[in-house]
Image 1: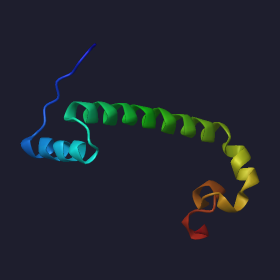
Image 2: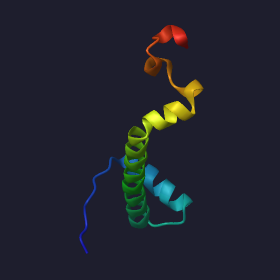
Image 3: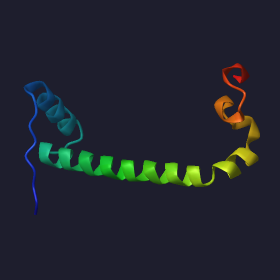
Image 4: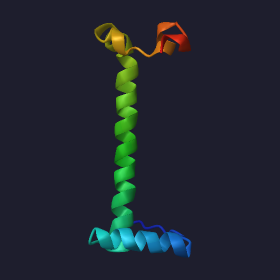
Length: 79
């Protein structure tokens, strides 16, 4: 299985050890899980942004009072 070496400052490593212990995990398991979770979070956010951008006109039509002032063409004074 592929592996990586990660360098931390003493302070960073102390924080990672503390966080791992708080979750009842080894440092290795904790760093693995956090890394995978971040990758999944990024994928999710990118998907939501893409969906929103593809359906922005529909959202704006369905919720006209929620359209930000900068998208209404009225400038900051509309806020």
